[in-house]
Length: 316
Image 1 (cartoon, rainbow, N blue to C red):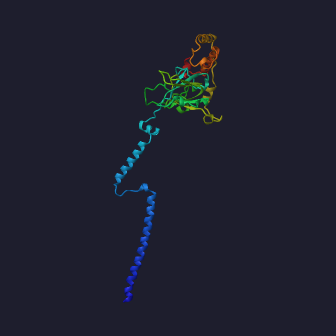
Image 2 (spheres, one colour):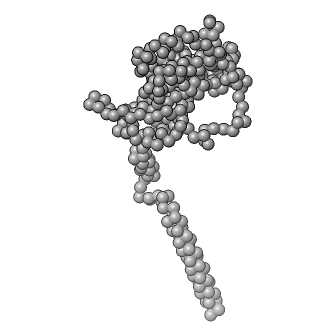
Image 3 (cartoon, rainbow, N blue to C red):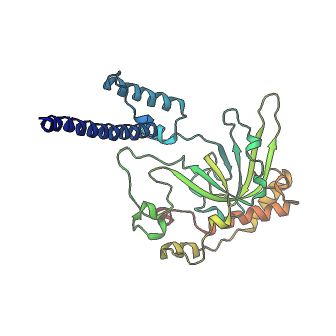
């Protein structure tokens, strides 16, 4: 009887022991979970708040954060379908029309002009050019503002017929044509000097960057100016070019300027030394003869590379 009464009591003790072990195991698991919760506190879900309410709160927080951050160019592009760019200046040039303007400015180093800088917001135009005089050349990013538009706005040409190819077409990205999806161009010019025109009662302070080797029409809007750095902007001599580009660069016409034209130009300058815009004593020439020679050389450089289109050449 005694033995039979001991069996149940031993069984209860075993059950208590096992229960204690399970409690300890559960306590260790709870402690581990508490550590994980602390490490990922942002993932805590408040049991007293409805799930949908939490989602709304999270969304509102994200929207508020975006409002506090300034918009990026990408944000503006997605909102408007385009990128808005401000003009930073305007070209003043010896060229008044597209016809007669050289294809590349460095082929006409005597061609002169200037960039008249705009005042952007409350910025200082004079401060924006501090240090620029230490460079010899600049890149000018500009808009082909005189491009004609097609009557059909959906008609966008993907191929161009360069004058040097005699009517044969190539892809628009294989050319330097001004007629592009976005009418933006880039050209390299030499800095001659930077002029600060003082403020008067009727005008604001103005900054003019005088340049040469210019191939832009008067009135061209300038989007940006960047200094030329040979290490970044030049490539080794083993470059590859299509034969029609190499042939066009090597082709120059013989230009003859008659003595009557030279005499007439000399007479004009003797009467008015400042008769020519961007040429004369104000721009570095010491004598009338220096001005005549420099200006005539510019005319010769422009005509030598034949700025006419293939259609105009055939008509002549």
